[in-house]
Length: 243
Ligand SMILES: [Fe+2]
Image 1 (cartoon, rainbow, N blue to C red):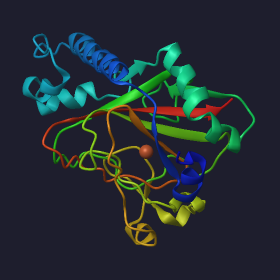
Image 2 (image 1 turned 180 degrees about the vertical axis):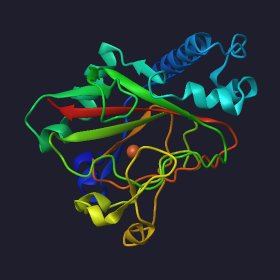
Image 3 (image 1 turned 90 degrees about the vertical axis):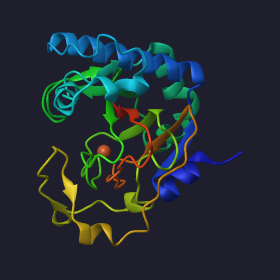
Image 4 (image 1 turned 90 degrees about the horizontal axis):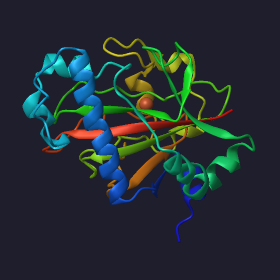
């Protein structure tokens, strides 16, 4: 059996089989329902006949897609049974190595991740068109830590290394200095300068199977994960931090 903690400490991430096919289908349905509901609220009528998440881009215009990817709407609830699985069985060993405190799944309910208050057991999802350049550049999810914060990236549509997160293995071993960061013109994440990125090992995109998840360290640099596949990519991010 592979040692996930060793893998996590060496590379800054670990690939873990967490969900089964049924669970993946359940969350796909949640995303689909969320999109249809949000569309109604925003007076977007084109999604009324959408039945399969995979067909989303055949029904939505680029302009309306941007409206639906608003931080406030692209949120789904994680069921209690799945929270238990995440906290204990699969990730527990890694979590307890970093802190003896209790962990929770949280999402900020504000428009920006640093504004607003935290809501428990919610996650944000994203949908990305093939070849779209509207993806976050290289960044780490945190540059300093008050509480220990992990991210679990869960693909729902698009699993292979053409779709998955682009990671810089080993980059978690450094607390990235302010001088490594740069201004972000299209998004809200604090990005990392290209010269700094070049210091690390070659980027790596894990080849995932349905139900597998990438758990990564708060300092791990990742991004520029352009969807190189033929279909859309749908994924959600679970943020897990100590209370
Ligand atoms: Fe990120």
